[in-house]
Every structure is written in structure tokens, then in C-alpha cells.
Amino acid sequence: MALETKRFKVINEGFKCENCAVDVPSTSGSTPRNHCPYCLYCKHVDINPGDRANTCKGLMKPIGVYTHAKKEYVILHQCQKCGGRVKAKAILGDGNASDNFDIILKLSSMPIDEQV
Ligand SMILES: [Zn+2]
Ligand SMILES: [Zn+2]
Image (tube, rainbow, N blue to C red; front, side, top):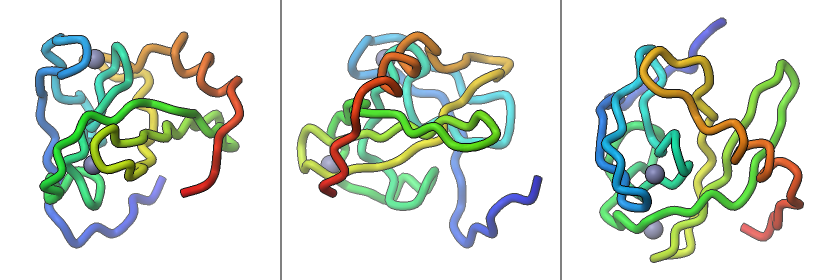
């Protein structure tokens, strides 16, 4: 599978989740960890995935999941500070920690409000 060409530096690091207070490990693969695998919250720190260039740093709530072909899940997050929205690919089958699939299934069954 071809990766997108990225001109910015991607940081794959662990962090402490500000929603459920769990220490989240980095991923075992090349996809940077950008959301908590346990509650799926993330922080508004990226402008492009993994660049940590956003100064908002608000807590972002998972509000929906898109399902793509090839069984790919994309989580839609909304920032509770600035209202911005970010999409993040679900991280499944990771050696360190995979996303909570129960939450993904629950979110994917909910309609997504597409007014961005
Ligand atoms: Zn969490
Ligand atoms: Zn924000």
C-alpha cells in the first residue's frame, strides 16, 4: 500500500490521555498515535496528522466514525475548545494498543452531522 507523500515531520509518540488518564503507548507501526485507543479522545495538536503544529491543544471528542471500503474506519473528532474537526484513521491490529472497537462500532452506527 502506497503511503501519502508527506512534507512535514511525523511524530509517533505516546502520551497521557486527558480524558481517561491512561498512559497511551506510541504505535508499533508507522501510523502516528493521535488519539487514545481506550476512549478515542484526542488533543487538538495537529494541523496535518502527526505534525503537532496546532496551538489549540483542546480536548477532542469522538463524534462519529466513517466506514470506508476495505474495512477502514475513520474517526471524526470535534474539539471542545475551538469546535474544529479532525478526521483520524482508526488504529486497529496495533502491537502496542488498538482502538476500542466497541466504541468504533457504536459511533459508526450513529449519524454524522456533516456541517463542518
Ligand atoms: Zn482516553
Ligand atoms: Zn481546537
